[in-house]
Length: 310
Image 1 (cartoon, rainbow, N blue to C red):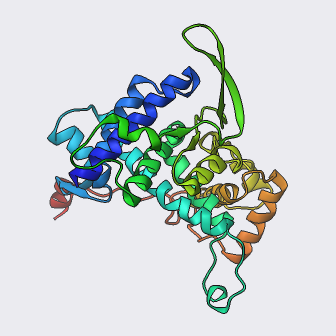
Image 2 (cartoon, one colour):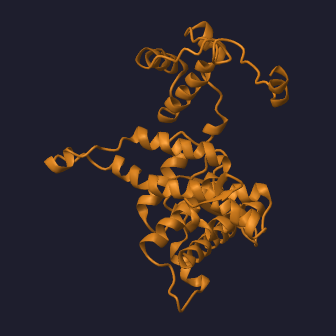
Image 3 (cartoon, rainbow, N blue to C red):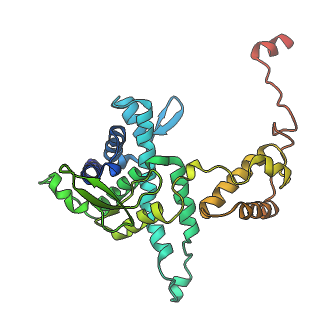
């Protein structure tokens, strides 16, 4: 486990360093770099949990917070979220490749269920909702995970930073551009895909992952989804869609969010139509009011009160 962890951390370190060399707009803050190094080093512990006081928590968080005592709660939590998001992005780039591939007409291929682009949008959106503004950082770590899984970046005998030069960012295979100034004040054009606060660039190796990363940042319409306000408000659901007040409102909000992740550029009228059809196909559970049990919940009597009644 130690080998891949170190290789991922060194590759992330290389990418972060290259960002800083290219342009200030592409670089990360000191806190983001710290979170990235922790996440890269502990990325192989993804999926592991530790049981603490009858509760289970992420092994990454526990190692940083409780075992090594190397980070405060916020940094440990951010590193755990980053590891989880990176592993999901690493898997999603394969889904995107499958969804983007031409439809095969062979009998064997036609019998297999095909991944749709809406599935990729929905699952990618879920990751963005969890990682928020750090999604470019999560893509960098995901790229490191993909690289190390397919071919070793360095050999055991030579663990030199120079070995990582061919695995860094590619500032040519991207879409938009900005200018920065070098030490001598000369204008330097930097190709990048910048949407909102993202700093996503192409990658030199594994073009399939690079295509997914740039599509996610520049063409999917998903960046910033964690700041979306509901197109159809709770009040409109009650008055126009006749959704009964109670837990049904939350359920309908969740359905709206999932639909919008699959249709990032959908309109308010389209959302309303979907919600109406959704209520017909999947009726909301009757909870009997805001309490969810026919009115106000009864308060449990204390142990002392029950004894006095006896």
